[in-house]
Length: 157
Image (cartoon, rainbow, N blue to C red; front, side, top):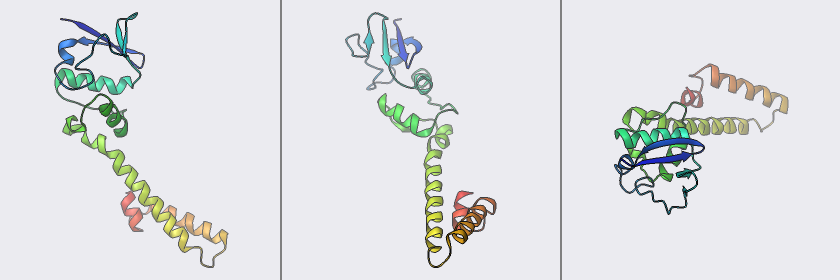
């Protein structure tokens, strides 16, 4: 049983070569000592990556299930999977919501921005800037406090 030491962003992980060879055609499945990532003085492979995301990925090699930490952003894990040569489809179904909720949040934020921009554009006709601000504040309050006050509010709730 050959042990492999991995330094991921300063955190040391130790596993076996046989564990890493379980998932072929990935960056970890074919580590060689002549790699640019190998540091012979420390006898380790160094990758300047997120150690928390890597812990989830290494557990996938061990259990064949990729579960995400609650601290990880969906975009961050996507970038890590891409770096390690893995597809997002390996994420366990129980964690898909975590993986894709960032997309939903961005869509809601874009809709909110669009709704505010549209409403502030309507105010440019002949109102003073003070009344524009007042109306915009009122609309934002409705958006946040009254979920059925507009389409944008319904989208954000």
